[in-house]
Amino acid sequence: MILKNVLPLVFAYLIGQAPAALEHHNRVVYGDINTGARFEQVMAHHDGFNEKLSGNFVELETRSGTDTSINVKRPPAMDVYDRFSVKMPVKIYESQTPNRCDAPSQMVFIAFPPRDDGKTTYRLFSYNYMVCAGGGEVSPSRLFEKYMEKYGSYDEKDYDRNMHIYNNVNKTFRVGVTPTKMENNAGLLISVTDDLVFKRAYKKWRLHVRKVEEGSKEKF
Image (cartoon, rainbow, N blue to C red; front, side, top):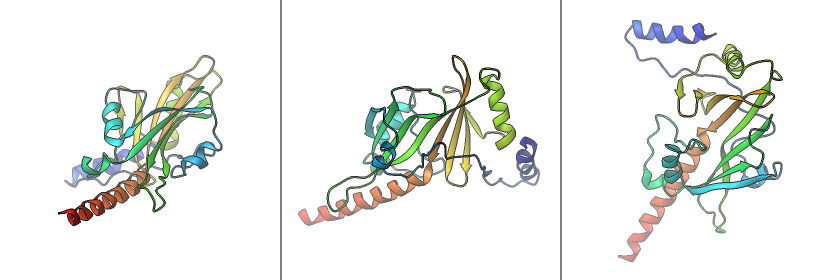
C-alpha cells in the first residue's frame, strides 16, 4: 500500500512534473461525531465537556505554535488573510476524562457571522478521538503500523505532537494520528479536521467584513 502511494510521486519527479496532491481515504467519522454540526447538536450527545479556551482564529492558531495541547491550523495551500480570520471566534472544549478509550477528548468549534436575529452559530471544525485496540498486547507504534497498512503512508509529521498527518483526505479533511500509550491499553489519538468548514466560515466572514467596510463610507 505504501509503495502504491509513492510510485506516482516518483514517476512525476522522473518526467519533471509537479505531482498532484495525493488523495487519501482515511476514516473521518468516529462514534456519532460529524464535523460541520452545530454546537448544540454535538453537545446534546456529549456531556462532560468544559470550555478550555476561546479566542479568535489568529490568536489560537498562534498559540498552537507553542501549546501542543491544542491544534488550530488553517488549511494548507489556502490564502488566508488575518484581516478576516481575526474576526472568526473559536471555542475549544475538552473532556473531563481525556484519553478515554473510544471517545472524543477535544472539540474545536468555529463561529459563523451573526444572523439577522443577532445570534451566532458555532460549527464543529475539528475533534480528537481516542481509538484503543489490542488490550495491552499491541504497542502503540505497532498499532500505527497497522493503520498505515490500511490507509497508506502519511504526508508529514508534527514532531512536537508526535502526530502523523494525512492531508487531502477525501478532498476535504486532514487527519492526524498520534500513537498513545495508556495504562492498560494502547491507542491512536485520531485528529479529524474539516477544511471545508473553515473555508465556508472564512468566506462568510470575508463577505461580512467587506459589507461592513462598504457601509462605513456612509459616515464620511
